[in-house]
Length: 240
Image (tube, rainbow, N blue to C red; front, side):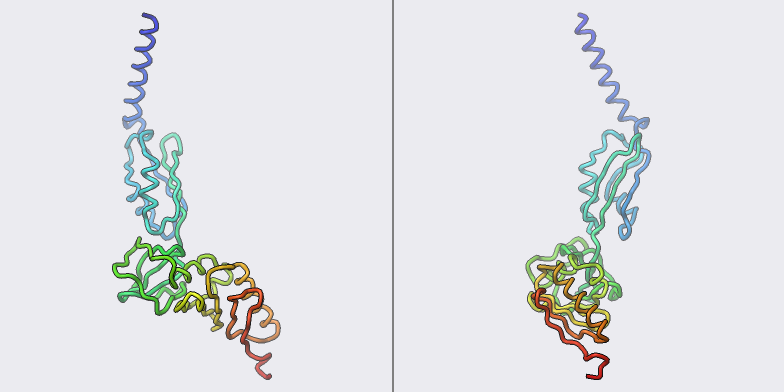
């Protein structure tokens, strides 16, 4: 009887606690969103589908994470409880690396081929990929097919050294091996496949620094074989 009595007490306590944690007394009081710049705070909250006051301990963190991760600009997300009653959603954004035109719009695309957004005008702060067709029905959240010229260009931009990527204004991606970038000063960089990128980027930066010390400007730098880059440049002081 004593054992049975304690068992009944334990069951009653468990039922009582289970009931209490589902009441407003243990409800969600706040949601904190961190790491967002391009993604609106309200967009993350809407995607999470959480409501203030709902049972805090009953929140399905995995489901919330999956819903927020479905946003086109979200590359990764972490959802945690910040006790006693706050939910923290930490977002890592997927940045655009280029713009591509189709259907009268300029589509902002990430390195992994995710279409992030559309703009009526050409974004001045992003490299523009010319003469590359996009599939029909493209919209934010679409994933462009891999293994083609555009995918190679996007991968190259995504993995490029920041000090070089900041100089890129235009992209010619007619074939995989002829991928070429145009820099702000007009220099053309024949890049080819998006492989050996640290070596290729270092070669471009070294050539440009060397020519600058000599009073020359690069016209075209071919780093498809980064160990032996070839260079077309202006003569020193334009007098030779």
